[in-house]
Image (cartoon, rainbow, N blue to C red):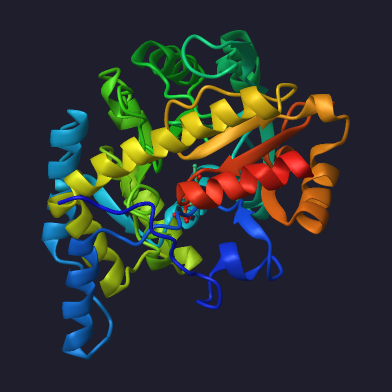
Length: 389
Ligand SMILES: Cc1ncc(COP(=O)(O)O)c(C=O)c1O
């Protein structure tokens, strides 16, 4: 069945962070959700559930973990025992629980920068410090103008600090768009293992591979990693279900799983809502064709961005996008700090992008993160506003 990603869905006035926060008239290409309707099978399943008319406390059936395990096996060649999966009300509360399980206030969480801003907030909110290991910028190998690689020497230094208690890998990486290879994950993980640091791999964007690109689950690259790591997984990014707040923590180590579960209970998080697990299992069981069509559309949007920038804004540079729908654009040549540029673009050009300053961009540089998950017509309108701005 064909899916119409060109359809413009009106989201203003629907209680929507992305569209209702900026003032009327501003095109919002910032927070990471998509302007597309969910897959038809998900909408139907939710309609049927609404028709039950009773929404008391929910008990996720065992089948929701089985759906995820089947999806991981089929899509990502990763065999996961459904009994090793914990529920979480979205990913960030899972991160808070893992930090609570492993760290005391003042301890450090090592992550690679630039970094997803939600990580930065949660780590600080738990009273911990961020030990940022800057990714190294290198020339692009495929589409795009530049890309990044890990700095293993720096990771080694950061992980050697006795205060470092967790390594948080973003796989694939938001905001730089890298899909880490098995070799890269293995090298980084082996350093953490050598220093006795527990590892967390956030794989929320894993299903959003650009066509031709392939996800490697962190836990699959070394026999030693499953027992020494936890992976966050969710249908929320790829299937646009973030508002239903449902995620999973996969952890093969029973003692550590119990520790994380205990921290979830202490944080008062962990129980799911009935719409969330229904939507997620429907996505994994029945919506692979929708996802594959989406990925082709998103790649078309990425190519549209590249072509537009190279033609009309040649002083900007775009990072290679291997996965996610979040483009990372170097706007240093415009001579303004990213926060100020984003503010001016919102006020004057009526287009809202996320400034690199939210994502621990390198000091002295300026980036914008552009959310490409919208209809091509809106994307082109936004890019024209950027050009005029
Ligand atoms: C890498 C990453 N992890 C986690 C999240 C947030 O996930 P959740 O809404 O499930 O807390 C996001 C949202 O953009 C993200 O990009």
